[in-house]
Image (cartoon, rainbow, N blue to C red; front, side, top):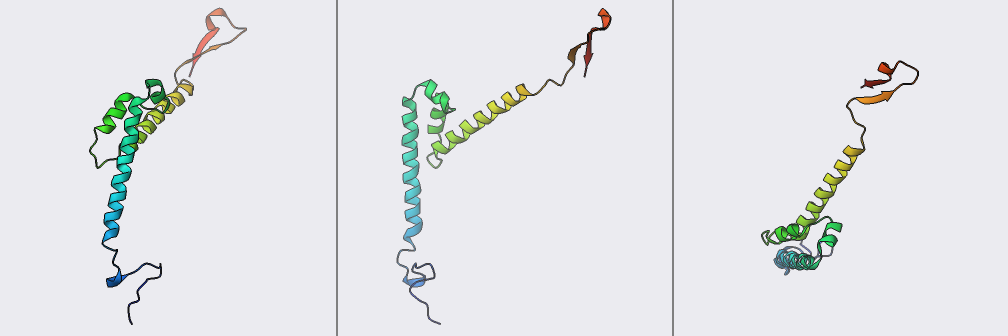
Length: 122
């Protein structure tokens, strides 16, 4: 069997593929360019006021910390995780406040002696 110039997907394959070595380099360049764009977008968050940052679940310290990360990490991804963690913790606190108390509850009963009007139950 002879090797064809293109595989099933329509791309060149085998020794005839002149661009195979360039694909990983090109994808690396695209990832680096995207991280640079994301880092610039995070820098613009420093121009926002504290109220606007809190609306999206961030603080000014979060933005500074994300920009201090190494360049191999995407600061916008880290900010997204921090905002999600903060939102989840806040919703958990709200849910815990909405649950009924598990401790003793006061129950008033009418038609009994005064000493037994208020009783505690679990």
